[in-house]
Structure formats: C-alpha cells, structure tokens
Length: 452
Image (cartoon, rainbow, N blue to C red; front, side, top):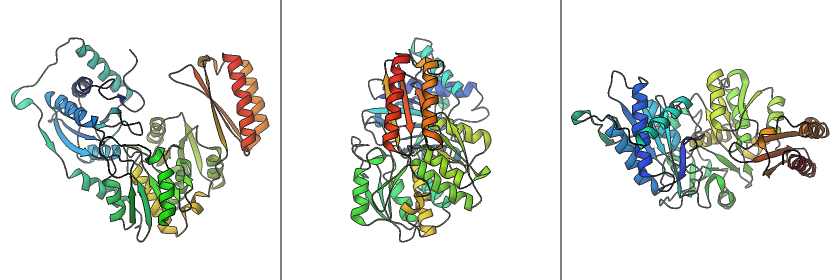
C-alpha cells in the first residue's frame, strides 16, 4: 500500500478510507512511538485533541481519544477549534502531543488526522513513518502492550482553550481595529466561533457569513475556495475588507472594498512591508514557493526585500523558515506562517494582522495590495506522459529555453511533474495574458510529444 501520511497528515473519505479503527490504531501507534522516542520520559503524557465541525469528526474524535487513553495518555479535548489553535495550545499547555481532526478545505465527506509534536510543531517525517509501520504491524495481529488500573489515560474537556487562543491572537496585534467594518467568511468551519470573537475584541465592526456550521455544510460554496459570497457581502455592506478562511482556518484570503480578491502573495507582500517597518522581518526575507506569482518576486525586489523560494507545500516553506530563522513565509493559496507567533499557517492571525495594517495606515487594502501587480499566469495539466523525464529531455529543455528568451525578465516558465499521477503541469507567466496562453500551449504540445 502507499504511504498513509501525506504532506498534511492522513486524509481520506471518512468511514471509507479513514475509519474509526484506523483513527484508534494510529493514535495508539503514535503514543507508543513517542514513548519509545523518549518524549514521555519522566512524566505522565498529555495530548490536546481538537477537530473541525464535520459530522465524521464526532466519531473520529471518540476513536482518537479512546486510542490515546488506552495507551496511557491523558487527553484534553478542546472541541471545535482551528488547526493553528490546536498547535498553539499543544505548545502553550506543555502537552506532549496534539491531534487535529480535519480535512481543511476538502469537501464534507473527507476528514483527516494531523499530529503535532511537543511545542505544536509538525511531526518529523521519520516519526510519521515509524507510526505508520507500528500501526501496520499491530493491525496485522501483533498485540499492544496496554496499561491497566491507574495507568490508563484520563479524559477531560478543556473549554478554556477557546479564550486562551483568542487572547493569544489579540496579544499579537500591533494596534487595534476600532471602527473598521470587516466581513468574515468562516466556511462553516472550525473558526466560526473564534474568528468573529477575536476581530470583535480587537475593536472591529464584524459581519459574518458562513458561520453556522451544522456538521454537513463545511466549505460548501463558501470560504477561501469560494469567494463569491464574500465579494458580494463586502460591497453590499460597504465594508473596508473581507476575510475568508477554509474549513480548519489555517488559510486566509481577502477581498478589498471593491470586491476584488487579494491572494496569498499580495497578503505576504503587505505583511512583509509592515513587519520590516516594525523591525521584525528578519534578514528582510520572505519565504514562498516556486508557484508564487512573478509579480510578487518583482515587488519584493523593488522594495529591497529578499525572496527565498521552496518546493510547493507549506511544509517546505516552514522547514526553510525554521532552518534559517526567517519570520514570514507562505503560499499563494493563503497559508501564511508568522513564525514568531505560530508554528503553522494561521488564517485568523493573518486576517487580524492584515486588518491591523489597514487600520494603522488609514489606507485601503486595495491601495496596500497594489504594492505588487499580479502577472497573468496560465496553468495547463498535461496527462498521460512520463513525468520522470521532465529534467532529462533535451527536446523539452530546448523548448523551455526558447520560451524563456521570448518572455524575458517579465515572464517565467515552470514545469512541475505530479507527485502521484502521470501528469506534468506547465505554468507560464507573462506581462500579457495572450502571450502567456500562447507560450503555455506550445510548451504543453512539446511535453506531449517529448514525454508521451
């Protein structure tokens, strides 16, 4: 079978791919692996467990809690909270392990399990591999070593986590949001309670949409993957800006007062300038992926800032930030990591800081986001090709070199083989959309002929 753990935990259709038995088994395996690694040495182990509002999260949470407690781990159930809240509380409470049940921006039938290590950091790949191996061995008959009597874990609700996390968010803000009218789209997700509370406490006039989760409507036509409702609401209410989260609120996209989208690249640019002004943008550097718009790179260069680019995925952004001590990084999709205050992307924190910049400067978000011009970007997926030959095909290399000469300094070509399918993604940016389409089409044809 393939690796259970993907780039963001274990994910699949709940009760089909991701069952209660799997959730229980992975939780027991995680407890045993961390115990063997010495994480629990000298004290009684504690875990923080949270979830998004999906209906399947109810039984999956029960399975995870049962698995951890059966392995001798005390459990603090924090209920429905964003992924970054679970990560924060894992660190703030000195817990040995955090578990979040969510499939993020995926549709309601999906769910997932994500583990956090002590401090609220993502588990290392080798620990995930070990957990998977231990889970598989016990799934096929090897008996668990089980505590009994007073050795079993105790379970209690930790309702204080909500206020503790909101207080943390408010404490990070450099200034208040008084009299700023903001529309929040909560995607009927995990931030439906936390985000409006935090913005209100910060002084904003808050209008919410997508904030009535019923277990079935998460991400359904709303949130960061469906901005239409938010755009209309911002214009209708004459709001200064709108903020959209995904189901587990580790993402943030925005809408300016005209109803125009402000994507993750633009948000990063606005926050980078604000952080440099406050002297907290270490090395004057921002970390982003190779999929960031070329306009983002050109804007940072014009402002005298440095850009470090990584492979696609917020985990790679985070690894680069942690290795070199950078303070700000993220993705075009709205995963923004502010490492001084969060160990993962935090959509509520990002939205608060973006709104704080609007309030502080008195400028519109449209004006602030205008620091960068998004160049037209065309993406073509070319299926049924040998993706392993992208870097070795002379014919393809020659076509790419010709395209780059044509585009010059205001264009870019990126070929990305899929990690899971016989597919190559052709991405072209140019100052003119017609030129981008033409170049992308020609390159896609070469990919088909050279790698088909």
